[in-house]
Length: 105
Image (cartoon, rainbow, N blue to C red; front, side):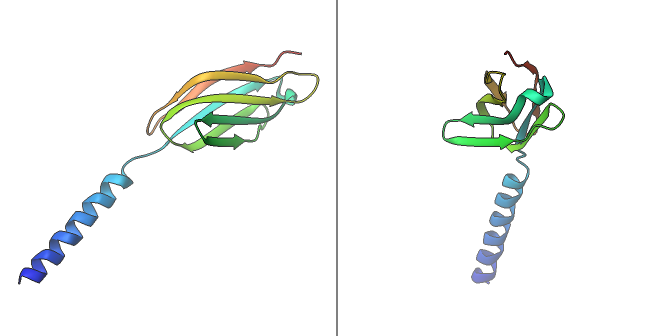
């Protein structure tokens, strides 16, 4: 009887723990680069985490991003210069739209 109760408590505790972690959703970052042909790649950096996104028609999206503050770097094609946006805050279950990043020549 004691063993069955302990097994039940262990399974119930494990189930609750998995449910708690399963309900946490990661966030995202999205934006647009202009001119579209000026961007080669977009990188988001927070501490030692580095995420990469391709640019499609000037738009980029990072999904499954951990909560935190990121710097977003646009790696540009010549003759354009690289650009960055600092202090991009990502929260759980939300996508942060950083708007349009205009590349300079």
